[in-house]
Image 1 (spheres, rainbow, N blue to C red):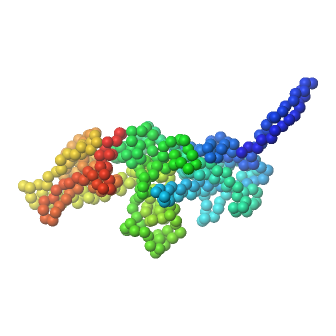
Image 2: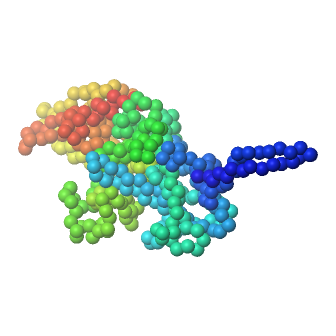
Image 3: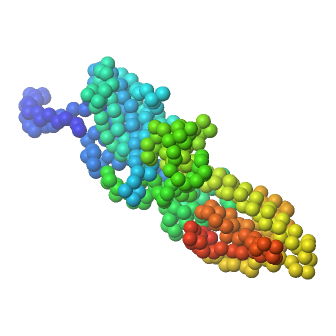
Length: 412
């Protein structure tokens, strides 16, 4: 807080004397912090020091002013812990300047000089703490002084998201992308897309403005969960596995980045990176990556299914495998027709009926990809022993519910 000094003094100007009482002279604090040129020291920490990450998204400009006659050494720490159902599920911790080999790095701010924090390409939120020591004082708990404020994310609106998707060409790749994002992020028909929990009435302990979470590991617009596990199975890692994976010292909620640039959690899952959690544009990029991976699995499945159906048809020309009847999900009709999603091979598409690309009628292949984003297969070929194969759809599953219907019922 700024210091205040009450003054009482007389001033004589041109022979006229005037008295001044109870005049307040505000003295700037030794170390002063600004967010986008707004001074924070005079604001109440618990109620007024909430700084937005813009919907662009962009970090605020954080400036530290050293008003003393001696230099200081300092760094900014940003940390956030996500709890769910009484358990820690994820921790974020970043320093600016970044630590090197677990060694503290600090910025020297000379007397009566300022420093603008360099966040690089990071988008981060949570509790922000400027830590500093005066002069040549040793960096330890006894000497470190702190100043605390809070960073909260602002959500993009529909036009922001649509523009980004169109600029990147994502809408040409997956016609259902906006619908999927609306459903996964629980945006519904709202114009505000939920990368972060909604609401601007921030408090220290509220989740407003913090990443939109869905268990067990989903974050942001696309609820990016995981890209698989480094070991097979779901059981807890053994000590030997933890050592082999470099996770021996990684505690619950913590993550590491491996030599392939992947973010690995303490359970050995490949999960969304820190920036994918906090930056909605990178989150959308990752949805596309996720769909591309899922699409290849679906293509491989259909290659096998179609090959099996064709083999039966070639051997039984008078008893062909029957296509499944049309199925309506939301405002989309799925049918046994060709898919216009890029990458579906001709060998697969030629098995199904020809069709023009329609806004309201889509291929069962598309429905299968939509469902597989969440897990499981909507449309597949079944066969019991040597009996005739048959196509089957699974609209309602224990894992996903009526997932395809939920997606296709969303606004674009």
